[in-house]
Amino acid sequence: MKWLLGILVVLLCALQYRLWIGDGSLAQAHRLEQEVTVQQAENDRLLERNRIIHVEVEDLKTGLDTIEERARKDISLIKKDETFYMLLDDQQ
Image 1 (cartoon, rainbow, N blue to C red):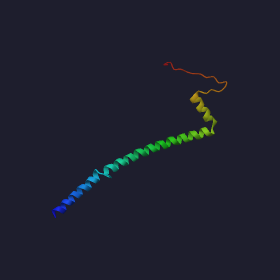
Image 2: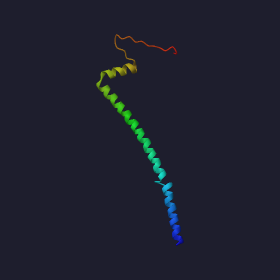
Image 3: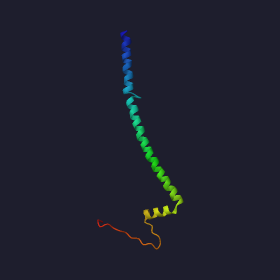
Image 4: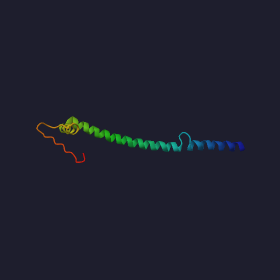
């Protein structure tokens, strides 16, 4: 009978080890849940960025005003018969 009790105690310890420390443990499951939460937040951020880029692309495909605005901002485009003024701060 003592050997049966010993085997049960060893088996209980082995199962407790696996539950708390080993593969598929509660700690590992909690860590994986945190990683999933972080990855979901990153995915949401990237989806929003992609949505904004998609809207910009559609604007550029359909609207000439958007193209003109981008050209004025990015490469300082000025139209014919326009005067360009550059204002400098006193600190420069």
